[in-house]
Image 1 (tube, rainbow, N blue to C red):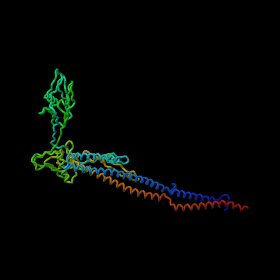
Image 2 (tube, one colour):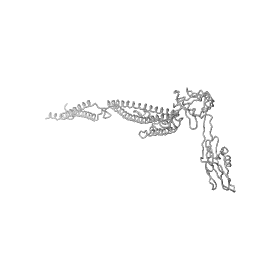
Image 3 (cartoon, rainbow, N blue to C red):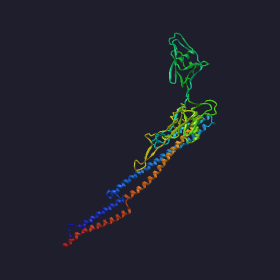
Image 4 (cartoon, one colour):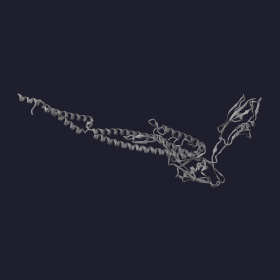
Length: 518
């Protein structure tokens, strides 16, 4: 029905024009941004999924960077550990050289000097091997493994321990001491930390005093009660304390003008130290034996014609010799400064065990060890976990997806080589066994570094693959198809032009109706 009040055709044309214009604008926005979803209403579910994927990709890219850092740390640490291993090999060579009977004590001193320099260099390397300001091998970094594993160890002092006398002797004959009337002289005699003041002279005398050598000896013996003061055949003063480890004289003084010092007693040295030494006694022509694990250790010589006395070092040497020949039980024996014999496994941790059994000719107590009712000495190692056992490196989109990076401490103390001394043939022999353990420890540490490094490398490859696949998935959801969207834009542009033309024609229709009124 022709009307002039309402131009329905024009309204329809304008509605289509608006719709086509909006479609054209939407296509232009997508083509300009490259994204299929320019607003939430375009694809609400797709937007949520693509946003989650995008955040995962960002996290995985950082995880890949973290893995690269982990590899760099391990490569740096392994380089330092390789240097430590080379030094230990050189130290073993030096120890082997010093242990040879063809080397003189003077040459061993030269060997010891180089040995000590190499010990210092190991500690220097452990400190100077750094990454991002942290020393990696000295136990101070965030990656240090503070898990303490101990070897199974049996320690004890050998029986028949005797103390040699501490003896202090003068070098010149003890002369009479002259003191003025009422004057006294005194000095302090210290025996194993116990101080005793010895006073000579009488402060009540009214005339000059002459203290004879015999009176000086008597005064010392009276004051101490234990020290045996005497004069030797040359008249020299001899101070001896049976069973004492240390004796000294000090604090010389005179109450008057007389001069009184160590020389007044004929002494040039003012202290002396005795020693303790344990031993195992075996009868002539007999031997004693026991087993460490399955390895039999024999002490003594069946061909001997006199009583045999073996020191702690003799026992340790016999043990190390037997273990070296066996190769099926990893242990070593050593003697500390106090003469204690220590037998330790080379394994560490809660699985380490040490068993001594089948004692023949001697008892475990002869070695200072405590045995069970079955005649067995048994010891086990322990593992103690501390607060720090390395650092967790995040290698995934979730914070729980980690690889623990742990670095073993490689100092002379942690390797057990800090106190090694190759200046003697015996010390060099002991050092060889300890150095073998240290070399094994470094090799184990490097193997662990290599295993972790390999894990990081595989994870890096996996992360790259995951990132690639997730980005492809995100692209499928969020990226615009340029060809399809260009076709939509072209169609929308044509429709806009058509709608504009239609709206123009619709606006002319009421004017045409006016001609009917003419």
